[in-house]
Image: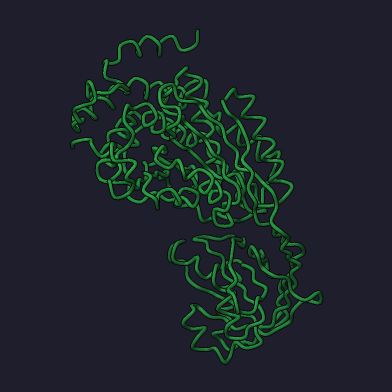
Length: 485
């Protein structure tokens, strides 16, 4: 007897809602046909919005995430906490009544930071807060004591290569953007080792800091010595830079007990609402379940994972069943470069023509502004019409270039992709740090994010035709390009 009002207004929907407008299929749809079909979902979109933002499901994704984050905590790849998180979610998704809840096995990296300690010995004693970077090697058991050289860029390091030999390189690179500045974290140890440094300490990739280091993955290079590497706070990097510019000698003691183990077994976590007409065709919504081993992983990417779960829950609660299968995947090993997602792609890519769209939320669940989309012009026009259904909450923008480590494999092969676009102004304050906790999350903003995620995924899953792709992307998708705009 739930949601009788929804049943009533669904009966009033135009006959073309969710149905083919091409009659016997011999005539391609015009763009006006597509617009009319999408407009027919207006009442369903409002019902989703009302349930998520104002109704019984209000704050549900936040509350679910809070219990999960407080219970499990951070979930580093290969850790017991990640195992516990996967078991938790498997049980929770089953209890929620979702379909085909299952785990798909993958292998993930297993690195542990162990004991970490850094102390500035000259010109004064000062405890330096550090977070070892993923895959870093350890220092010798006795640690490393060495003079510091501070540089602001790789170019400066190369110019001063003779000075760096036998020293600890401290990078004090300015934060420009995450995409540009993160190369110092990922490549800093390699570049320092090339000039003979014994370790590297990298200013955290953060737009704001309260003396908090931010961790992340880094990569060594074949043939280059592997040296210990960690991030330090913005404040300590700037302090050492000022000291260095005054000509002050800086000496630091560094001890790290990091260890890398053989890859560990893990799982991608999957749940579905099976389609009622084209069950083999997939609309995929996703976030990643793993996190770094600091904070709670509530923002990165607990929020994205839990609004993806919420999308299926809202659709189930409203008694809706789209034509295509709506599949949620909670990825594992994302923080190490999309390891679990790459293995999922290899397992499922033979059915790539059945993937309608791949969606990932991995940039926070702050106040949403719209959707970022990757696909051809025809598909983009359709997405714009779908986003217009979200006018009641004033979230209608479509941006270029969907972003998501886990869905990039599919987008490179021509599958349309989408990512949530939200307010990132504070995201890198907390990213990969002890500050990534439930305190960062806002229930009202998560409600809005869930509404966007659900409306978009449901409408795409229920439309009669899949999103168009160009012939060049997939010959098997030629029929999708028959839509006439």
